[in-house]
Amino acid sequence: MAAELLDVPRRGAEVIYRVSSSILLLALAAMAQQQLMPGTPAPPVGPDPNAALSSNPAFTSNSELRQPITAKERIDWVVKGTIGPASLAGELFGAGWDTLFNQPKTYGPHWKGFGDRVAMSVAGNVMSNTMEAGLGAIWGEDPRYMRDGEAPFSHRLGHAVKMTFMAQNRDGKVVPAYARVIAIPGSNFVSNAWRAPGDHTAGDAAIRTGLGFLGRFGNNTFEEFWPDIKQKVFHRER
Image 1 (cartoon, helix red, strand yellow):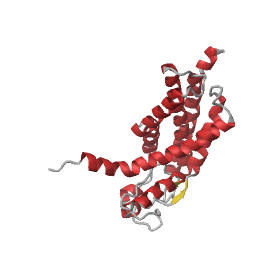
Image 2: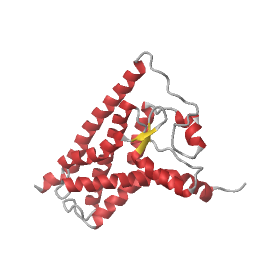
Image 3: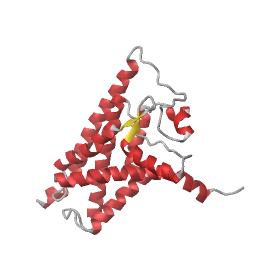
Image 4: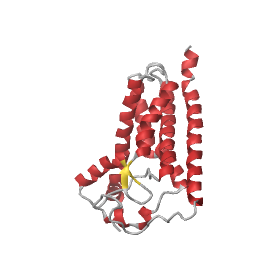
């Protein structure tokens, strides 16, 4: 019995890999079909007053930011959102916290338990991010966060909150992030099938879902303010 419980992360990662691969292939097929459709109008890249509800001119009129996300950029976003510095730091912190309090107890309060928790967290993020990127590709939802760097602090913080549940579509308009709203709870509830006892109930999945949206807000806040902090801290006068 103990051996089967310790094998949970490996089996979970295998299932997640298969599900994620299928969704990503579906997304790539959908994007390829869209590119091949005759008469499809090219997405706008110029200024559009409805592009985004932001006070930052660069957010609404910068043609580079308005370019629709490509298939490669979707894959890069999944990788960054899973093992990027900010995401990996959050995964390590969460695993360390759970190891400290030994939750769930199946993994144990030791280094191996910490490793198992990290592996499960990374695998869960792979599934969630791939679902969001893959499903969003079908209807043109861009999972990337767009900064509002020229606005006052309070507006920028509110922007980070808003974009936790909103996203830009292929026309540059801000719309509800349907793929994200499906992916975060969907991946958490589906993962109950292979999670360890003590971490596989509907209540556990609901808590992980809430933490998932909280983590997205944290990532948005980091992306919003870190460039400014980095410039002030590491800038050297010549």
